[in-house]
Image (cartoon, rainbow, N blue to C red; front, side):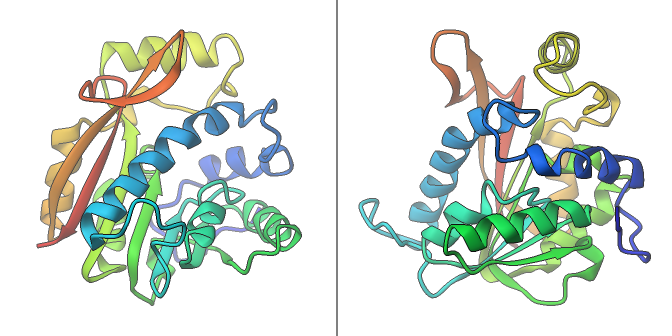
Amino acid sequence: MTVASDSVTIDPKEAAHFGAMAEDWWDPRGSSAMLHKLNPPRLRYIRERIDAHWHSDPSDFRPLSGKSALDVGCGAGLLAEPLARMGASVTGIDAAQENAAVAALHARTMGLSIDYRAGSVENIESRYDLVICLEVIEHVVDPAGFVAGLARAVVPGGLLIMSTPNRTPLSRLAMITLAEGTGRIPRGTHDWSKFLTPDELTELLEAAGMHVIDRRGLTLNPATGFTLGDDLSLDYFLTAIPA
């Protein structure tokens, strides 16, 4: 497992944990099954914010044509590939070399050109129209430094979309006691004490020169699965723009 030697935000233990799942990442019944279930509402939210920000036609299959996108903590590419299909020039960065390698191989088999790299936000030199970072900040050792790195990667007039679990009794019960306890998520994936509340993450974004323009919750309905809504108590999205 390879991690950028100059990184101050990556937790090597976290990178190793997710790197060990690399070969299984694209299996919807494997260790990343929960991420596959999360992807439809994630993509709905991302598309909604893209259309609202750039005034794109919701029926346009390629609303990101001519734009660049960065997926931080890209894993094996579950979000990077849809972004590429939406027309973006996509870069994916992940703390684990294994994930970047599996992502690159999968993209090639899908006929997609995506620039995958192993590293951290400290290594990002370019700026992007759209920066995505979903379910990652709860795994880093320096959330403030991590958010500052994300903010630096957004071009003026660009868009940053993040998601993370809220630090509530519900998230502890649902994500650790139940999901990890029953093996639906690999044990050790989460540390509840590292979860951030929406207000805490908003403060970090504002300190990094960003302005939060939207908050949305991700809830779990036993009958319908994960859905978007106003309840932020389990997991939530924040969208921000340079202030």
